[in-house]
Image (cartoon, rainbow, N blue to C red; front, side, top):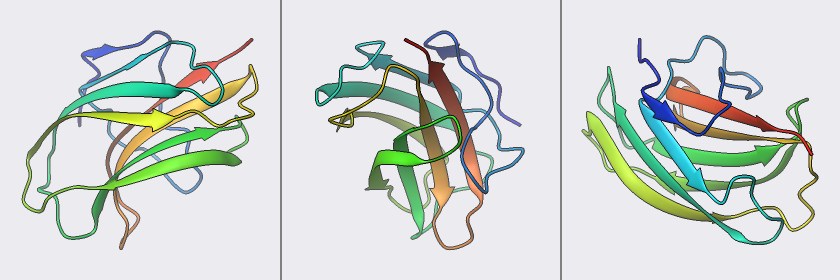
Length: 125
C-alpha cells in the first residue's frame, strides 16, 4: 500500500467511479491551485508502484463533480515495465470548471480497470 508523502492540501482517497480501495500515490502536486477554468494546470507526479506497468497502463487526470461526472480528462500512456513513475504533465482545466469540483489523478490498467495508485483533491469555491 502506498502512503501519501507530498501533495497539495487537502487531498483524499480516490473519488473515481469504479475505483475502490486504491493505493495512494506517493506525491502529486499541481499549480495553480485552485485551477483556473480553461487554463493549463501543471501536475508533478511521483510514485513507487507495487506492480510494474504494462501495455495498458495509463496516467489519467480528471476534472469531475463530486458525484463522479467527468468534465474532462487527460489520458497519458505510460511505458511498460515501470516500477517508478516520475513525470510532469500539463493538462487544461475544463473550460467551464465550476468552483466546486474534484481533481483525480490515477495510474490505472485500462484493460483490467485496476488502479496502481490514485489520489483526489476536492476544491470548493
